[in-house]
Image 1 (cartoon, rainbow, N blue to C red):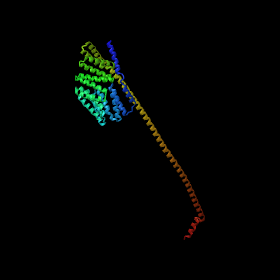
Image 2: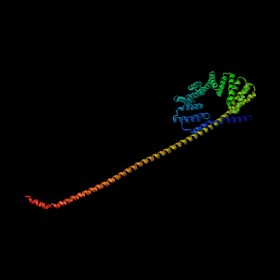
Image 3: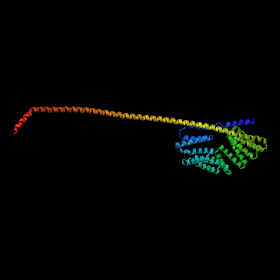
Image 4: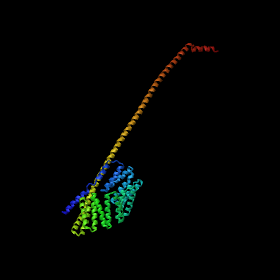
Amino acid sequence: MRKIVKYYILIILIISKLSGQNRKTDSIYNCLKSSKQDSNKVKLLNLMGWEVSYFDLDSGLKYAFQGLSLAKQINFQNSNGDLCNTIGAIYSDQGNYGEAFSYLKLGLENCERYPDVYVEGSLNNSLGMLFQRKKEYNKAIKYYYKAIEAYQKNRLSTPVNTMYGNLAGVFELNNQLDSALIYVNKSIEYNLKLKYKKKLAYNYVNASEIHYYLGNFDKAGRFADLAMNIARQEDDNFLLIHTLIHKGHALNKANRFDESIIVLSEAINLAKNSGEIEVLKTGSKYLSESFIGRKDYKKALELQLDYQFYKDSLFNSENNKIIKELEAKYEVDKKQKENELLQAKNELSTAEIKRQQMFSYIILIGLIMVSALSFFIFNGLKRQRKANLIISSQKIEVEKQKQKIEEHQKEIVDSINYAKKIQEAMLPADSYLKKHIKNKNP
């Protein structure tokens, strides 16, 4: 019966843990559907890639590469640094450190051409996190320092403070606990000054961890108390649960078993309400150790069995997480295909409009050409008709002149003939003349 109840609680925890994951991406997606192919869409694709990568690294990478492609298409090169940071960070999350390093360095090269100190700082921070994951802590420290240098160029104090926290973490991992404390104290000083309570609480948790590793269990407990006070004031159960677990473990190491049991029991009860299965596992283990310290072996055994149960159930939780991730991938892919279909329809509509415009232009140009040709033909015919009228008029005039000349010529010929007849009538005949002219000659 006890085991059935545990499984029932576990199912409730899993359901509550996996609900309401995609609200922000839905909002960005809706903006993407109505956006034009411009610089704003590049920024939306980059933001979508970053947000989607929290639950689907492959789809996040796909969106970021779409942004990079569009930026190249519209010649919006000054966004490449930010896009390269998103791509590099996702590759780093995937464990593909070679590709991650290449894109992050490419982003830094872009920042040399298009200076942006915030993006430069972000790229160096991502490189620091990459080398921290590879456990190359000295390189990680180098890039965190470079990020601080970039942010300080424009006096960007908030990201500088974030770098202090990152440096504290990597120094702690590198077992340079004194250096870790220096940067935790710097971050505490900054957050106290600006009254950033939640960030201050995480500083206190970090300081508590460092003192725990240094063996200063009392100091670790005091810093944990400071963090818990803020968590209760801010009603931040996540922070409160993890701080309680940390403090309970520190109290256990200080052999303060009764206090440890009280603190760890509270953490477990809160974890059951919030769905923190990992906390239930860890809390059960630490609480079992506390009961061993009190020599209450029966309770310790029960808690050890709880620990084993939650440990085994994490496998089922991971399976559910994988199913949820696949569902999220399906949703993202579905939305992306819808977006591509909508984009294709828009492109088709644009092409159809352009085709219709081109057809209209051709018809208009054809009408203009026909009108111009008609004008020239009509004008030519008009000139030809006028020329024909002139020629006809000239022909009639020529005919008249010809007729007059012919009549005048006839009159002249008639006059000549008439004169000839008169002459012939007045003169003797040829035979008479020949006869008398001949007789006179000796």
